[in-house]
Amino acid sequence: MHARTPWRLAGAVIAALVLVTSCGSSGSDPEPGDAATRTFEADNGRVTIPADPQRIVATGYAVPVLIEAGAKLVGISTWKRGLPLMSEEDRRTYDGLAKVAGETAAETNYEAVAKANPDLIVIGVPKPALGDLDMKRLESIAPVAVIGPTVPSAWRELSHRQADAAGRAEAVEKTKAAYEKKAGELKAKYRDALAGLKFGHVGAYGDISAGTFMREFGGSWGTNIAQDVGVNYYGEVEKKGGGAADVSEHPSIEELPESLGEADAITYTVEADGKPSPEVKYVLDSKLWKNLPAVKDGLTFPFRYTEAATYESALRTLDAIDEALAPLLDR
Image (cartoon, rainbow, N blue to C red; front, side):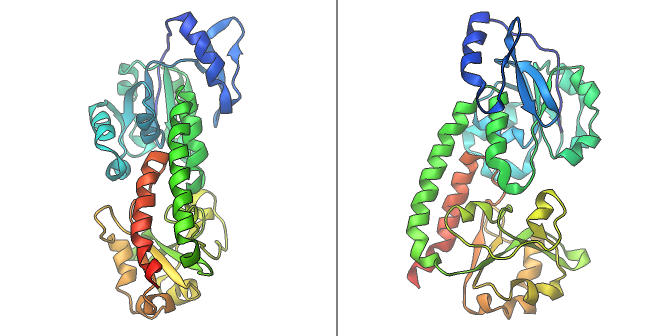
């Protein structure tokens, strides 16, 4: 779901000014004798990219980030999982952009990428997915900066790096400040109600056919934003497998009492409409679930918008968490 193309920049004076302001977190420097480019530290090494990119193709996790940041996009991969989190304006932008790739890296349309004539390609997929891409072909089109996710909670750094590559780091800083302000307010609001409570979380990616459920620990999709509000998720993965497998695991449903029996309270992922996915409903319908101490005590809380991967979308997640935890204030 990612790609790029040859690049050309106009306006040496403007580019020079951008160079002064855009080196930032990437540790980039202008190339000797070329005021229109800079060196950027990407996952695929030090890449020479435009200092002020005018035609950007983005894929994966870079899609929502660069739409929100107002980057100069000419093509994107689809990003269906993030549609419920988009504002009306961002959704219009998303719908109006050429789709040059699908939901996976293997669904990249190289001809469409080339047709978009990008001067920069920002690939936002995990490193293992790069094996599904013809990187040499992409690099023959335009400079490619791979800036992909690691653990789910790393979206904060990831979004800043992606925006920085596109020359829009300041836009992320703005929404970061708004997010941190709201998170701080909610942390103060729930400080007493959350004190001493150990939480567990049931995620949305279990496998009913295999009889498993998803247990998420701190730093995972369903937990990392709630942690900024002061929710304490206990435990950790027994055997880390890299990426999301460092902060989540998939026990059998029979292990539910062992996995979540110590939880004072449990949060669980639901869809944007508030309904649980079949994978989560599988857990909620289990007799083992109904016998958990936290469930018997009525301390279970559904979380919407757990897939937020930008500060702007995470503001919606904070609102959803506030709504879900509100009953705690009446205890």
